[in-house]
Image 1 (cartoon, chains in turn blue, purple):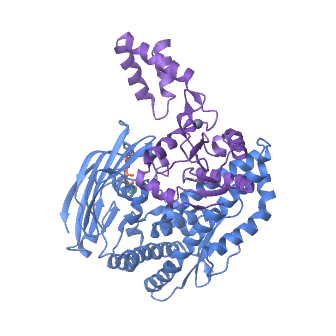
Image 2 (cartoon, rainbow over the protein chains, first blue to last red):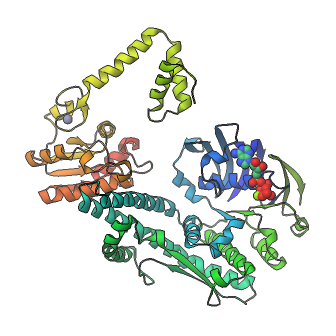
Length: 372
Length: 200
Ligand SMILES: Nc1ncnc2c1ncn2[C@@H]1O[C@H](COP(=O)(O)OP(=O)(O)OP(=O)(O)O)[C@@H](O)[C@H]1O
Ligand SMILES: [Mg+2]
Ligand SMILES: [Zn+2]
């Protein structure tokens, strides 16, 4: 998969910009606050339909305007696809090859982002790792994002109902709750099942990459921690049954607290190195390497599943790695179209001679500086 | 945010309450009316008042009509054993356009959604149960949308209707994207109708 061209109108600090990226490595340099991350954000938005850092769509629209468009030409399985987003404060439209298209179509396009915030994946709260499960792990199965959105919707609806029941604002409590329970267990079991399916393939790849990066010094272990008592190898139906049984017992507490206490929104991923929990005991460098292994394993699994590499976005992370990890990364990505932002290049131009393009950003203006 | 005098501001506010209309469009519509001849405004106002006065719910299926019984409920050539339950009047139009269904309808006027404060008591269930008791209905086809709220409504209805000994089936599973019946084309809709399975 490859981005052929990008045209931005009123996206963040880009008023009008159009560029043709290199098919391999694109290094985007410039001083702070010029628009390097904004550029990655626009590519990420193209494929995910949302930003990785803006809370609201309004934030990505140029301050003096009320609409932004991102238009991206993509080569996917030797087909040309024209993806266009038209985004306003309160509504957005996806147009693929000139036709209004539901967002789910984008699940076939892969993008992997590695940014400084990803360190929280290892050292942050369980919520950070659930974000990883939904955004990163989930993207490896084209059906996941829809399933997850439905589950999230059921959850909000059910929590609202729990509150109504507690405050005695509704008459049909029991049978109504039973119907929402059924929805919760069905969709929840599906989310958990899909996560486990993907992790079963992803974890071994991450382990072997981590082994290689650390030259055999560290064994990475990753395990799904569920709020339900699950054993390995369960079918979706079995997960549903377990959710059903445990969920029923939890109900009185849930009404009291107006919260759904069990389900994939409470689950976590445990990460450890040589048997020691990485979250509390890993050094900064170790945590960064775990993240790197997890990100690289996504590239690899995407390739195995779909026969093509996704787009890789590296925001300010390359130069945080030591030399051997940098070259390990660059070596891994020689078949992947990559966008790297950095305020200083650290001489990397010389390492990747012949394999990319150096770009310069100045206050929302992008220029190709030199062929590497 | 607006500096218009009373009546103009009121008109803009009223337009802005309509679905899909933002502040800017509301202003544009208001000025369009102000710039067109007085008769145009008169006839728009008349149409609005008339539609509200003459259109009501059909006493049988709750679809919108200007008569006591809607044309579909009056049509005696239809199959009285089949009843199709939909969320909105626009879903009846979609089904009728597809021409694959020859039974009768019941319009719920919504779907169960705690977030929007809509419970079973806000839907036309009283009217539905009355029909199920007296009519010759043998099969109820649940055609609520395939989003979470439509699914939940269908589940709830299945539990309500099954004990009455009536067969309950569900369509909309085969209907892709957008999840609204409204957007399904005729062929998809008819296929979903043919392939309906027992539900609940
Ligand atoms: N909606 C917007 N409209 C106009 N300008 C914006 C908008 N949002 C952000 N900016 C501007 O974009 C700039 C930030 O761009 P970006 O985050 O891409 O910087 P960067 O080049 O990655 O910098 P750093 O090296 O510090 O990470 C800021 O100057 C900010 O004022
Ligand atoms: Mg930046
Ligand atoms: Zn009628």
